[in-house]
Image (cartoon, rainbow, N blue to C red; front, side):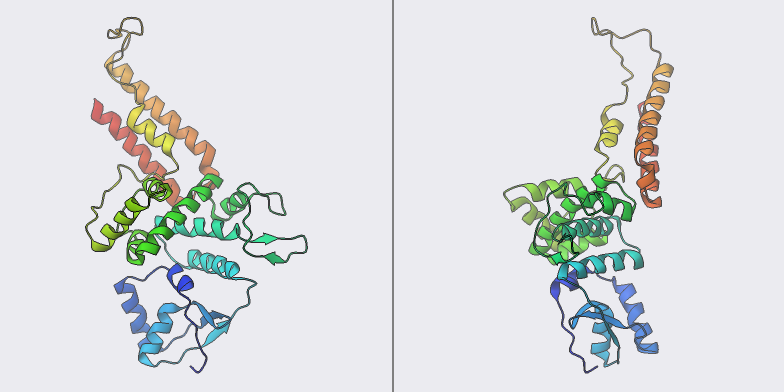
Length: 302
C-alpha cells in the first residue's frame, strides 16, 4: 500500500467503463475476499486494475502490484488493448475502436533492422513490416477480420477520439452501446473540416437529447455494397421493355420473385466466399441476420 501509484488519464480512459451492476459486484467481492488480483504498473503508472485500485483506496483494502517493462507508451497501449480484448465481452463498437487504435498505435512505431523501437515516426499506409506483411494485414490475421476492416476501424477510432476530446461521457456512451450510431456516419462527421457537426453530436449525446436510431440492419459499415444491394438493387416487379418502356410481358410475378431470391442469395454467397476465413462467429451471425433482412424485403414487395 506504500507504493506510489500514478494515474495516467490516457491509459485510464482507454479502458471500458464498468456499468453500475458490474462495478457493484466487483466491489462486493473485494470487500468480502480482498483484492486477489494484482494491479499492473509500468514505471509506477497503473495500466491494469483501475476499478480495483479505486475500490481498495476508498475502503483502505491492501493490494499487491506487478511491474511490467515496455519500451514505450505505444507498446503499453498495445498490451492494454490485447489484454482487454482477451478478457472482456466487448461491444462491437469497443472491438472496432480497439482494433483501430491498435493499428494507429503500431503506425507510430518503426522497428529498425536491429529491432530497436523508434517512436513518433509515422509509417505510410502500405509500409511493410519485416515479414513483408502490411500492418493492416498482420492485424487482420490477429483479430480474424479483413485488412479493410482494420483500416476502417482506424477511422472509427479517430472519430471516437475526437468525440472524447469534446465529451468523454459521449464517447463512453457510444462505446458501451447506450447510444446506437452508424460507424460510417461517425467517420463522415469526423472527416469534415468544420467540427461543428460532430461537436453538436457529442453534446447532444452527453445531454441525452440525441435520438437513438436503430439501423435497418446490423451489417458492418464496411459492407456498403451488400447494404445497397438489399435496399436498391432488387429487381422491381414492374419490369419494363427497354425499347419503349412498356411492361415486359415475358416476366410473370412468380418469375420475378424467384429472380430476386437468386440475386440476393448469389450476392450473399459471393460476400461469404471473399471473407468467411476472416470472420468471427459474431460477424458471421451479423451477416446471416442481414441476409434474412434482405429476404424479408423481397417478401414485403410481393
